[in-house]
Image (cartoon, rainbow, N blue to C red; front, side, top):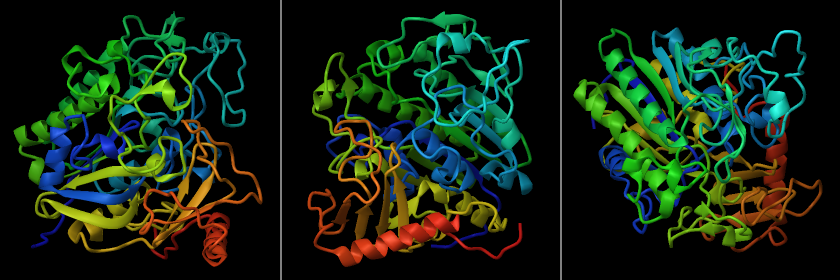
Length: 495
């Protein structure tokens, strides 16, 4: 296959919220959810089989994607942001958007943000927005202290994005409910949503807001942006984030046109909705003649939940799965340190650069996105940015290439794991490390862990912790070194 110069391709990174390996047809032939558009990307590009999110939950993964740095190195060592916390990404940190802007890209973030924004209290009111993370859900009393007319600081525009349209957190689950354009709310959150949808949270809401309209609006804004960029002389980077298929997974929260499109209930319909959003992007690229010079990446921020959560249920009985296996054969779900928590669908289409219908078994992480963009554009990185990011551009060009020998995983409660070759060691926990069933606990110092041979036992069924102390000791030493060094990659290139 010939490899012509990259010539600064457009780059579109599309990320679902809580979509699992087993949800996508090209990964799971038994999926009860039609995903024709993601299947098309796999057919016309590359399907990764060993790709992972930087974390098993949302906020830390997004931090890793945009910075090339593991979030557990930041002030957020576990869990997620709930809605009103200050910006998590440091104001001087080099992000993917800043890097691409340095070489002439127009950059846009559209959809869910979930990395913190700088809110302002009402005149005469003091509120400590800088108290330690993590926070808990916002109270009504706290939300009523916020002046929603004031600009939101420290967000996408302050971190290198030329344009932002989206929501501060999960558009259907976390207040404030309302769209933001650049640094201001489109419609001010002025009503208190007192009786939330099941699994959603109460909070301030823009007038007329309906959860089911969030993703169609996000898709429409993405299509509009791509059309506008077709008329420009500069390449563009679009960071596009859906809410689907995040909870709440109820029929009322699914747009009418997406209802009953799957055989896996409302959550399955929301996966179908995300696939429809991918189709909207592919169609407008074809329409505007930009498909051949655009790298499209499609993935998810973490693993899936089992299905639709049911009132009054406990454990797995709390979920109706409809016979669908959202994690396929991988053990665990969202928030877990097991594979189901962080092994992700990752699809890449780039005509002329990525071989159509190719499959790569290379170990890669979404934290590698920033180094990959630097490699594509020839913009060097130094030791002060993208500390944990390794370019997978060689894999895009050759599915048999390998760029990583090991990779750190992290759960919702802060449990660490290190994958090295065939081995995966989970430290200070014999459980899941996350809130989804079976619920786990935070790491316990000096507690026994778990060790699996992922080639012989991909389902993580046989714990070899006691049998192979030599392997677990070697991996434990390496993890300590990575954590203490402040990076997993050493570079000498200038900024």
